[in-house]
Length: 109
Image 1 (cartoon, rainbow, N blue to C red):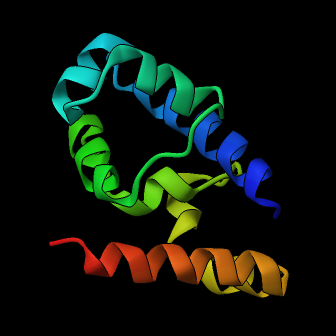
Image 2 (image 1 turned 90 degrees about the horizontal axis):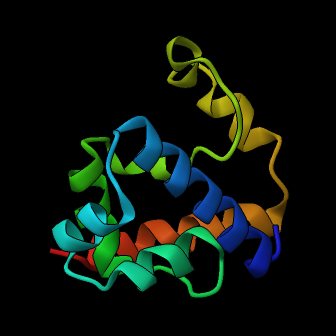
């Protein structure tokens, strides 16, 4: 997955979760401590989200962090069971992107 594709997928997923949580861009921005335009830019892949904001976004949406990165349609019941199969289906570049995200998230305290 190319970087720009990743931003598009993340933005799409962020919007989906925000709408499901019935939270406006304004309210999410307030909870995360950013401008409303920043949330719009994230959702439209104009700007990447910073790693330090990821836990705050997940908290504001009341979802575990990993759900921000589920860019595919998987039933919730199957999601936990299918991680191995999902990871096996990814390219080396996609796995590197995922592992880099995890490394950065581990730095956040």
